[in-house]
Length: 490
Image 1 (cartoon, rainbow, N blue to C red):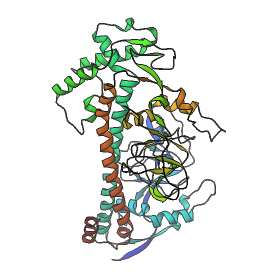
Image 2: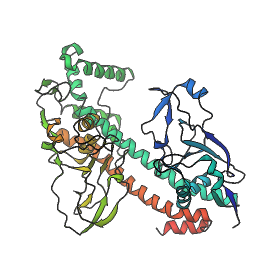
Image 3: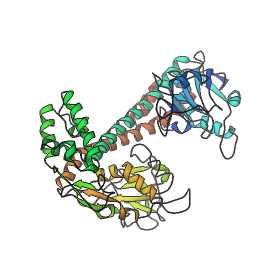
Image 4: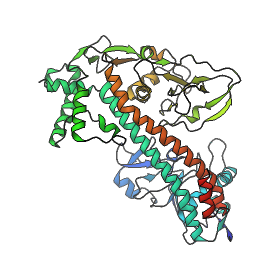
């Protein structure tokens, strides 16, 4: 195969550069992504701590905007990270990154994307960047980065499409997992934070919003509005995530859904009662006959787990904990010399700033029932106890109120504060006296987490194949028939 040497700049027909321009931002509007939104393991930009711009700012402030099939290229902070721009383009880009457009007479867009993800390219960029505290890869240095490019555009298109198809399937699995998590999280909030079934039972018993105590009236009004909107749409006013939360796994007909909803609501009371602590439930009100218990009473916090010194075990550090989803990103095997120990279906919760603030949480789904793993001392291990399933604990760990409590009760010096175990002695949960509520919650959410684990395993499998093929695709070493054979033997 014939190759020709080009500079990075030669391979581009256009560069959208907004570096050095800090635009005015709003609370709502068009998403503005920054360099933190570009990840090595994501095909598209992720919406992580994004800001927004007004329509007027979008039209007048920027030098230009990305177009579909452009590539976002990070210049500062993590130089060389790239993301594919989808169609339609859902955002605009901040400074310290550029949108690059392939010169299609020389290189296929997806082949360029694969080329930039290639480890040898990343290494070259790393060797060229400047700056010690914050690395920079200057746009002016694009002309100093060279590549040997296959001249066969048909081959480029095939190789680029192959790499992209793997990445696209991985991304689809990640998005599915995010949806499954959101469904489980919404059900947790509906039942154990907002107490929607209790309000519904009270309304069906004839109560109006004014009949509720003052502390509950705002929430009662919101629930009543939801019921009215559902009735106007011809739908039953029910918990928004009952059996539908697992609809992707277990499709339900309308009659089954209605019967199941009625059964679930029958597990909940129709009244509230006041407890001594105003921080519990809704302004100190919890469902009748429910009990306020601390997290440490109902969940095993950093449970004692045995793992002999010098034994070889699976290891996960703080970097492996995700901010989106529950998949542990990197698992290695090493000799145990200390650290937090965990078992299958434990929840790992970051205990330090800013990891806790960023939502770093993981579900251990990569061990067998007999295995013990270990990792960083900077995360807390939460383990199920009695009727509380790991799906409940996973949802609690991502609950906004719970995380806020953990952050407010950190101790230590600024910038390096930690959550202590005592934090879980003072955070109170509203616990139903009817254990069938926990059982039903598990029935509805556990399939979501099991499907997430299946998707995680497929993500790891596809990623391994894709990343193994990538250098061979870029170099032209691997032909189509050989690629198929390589995949089939994995």
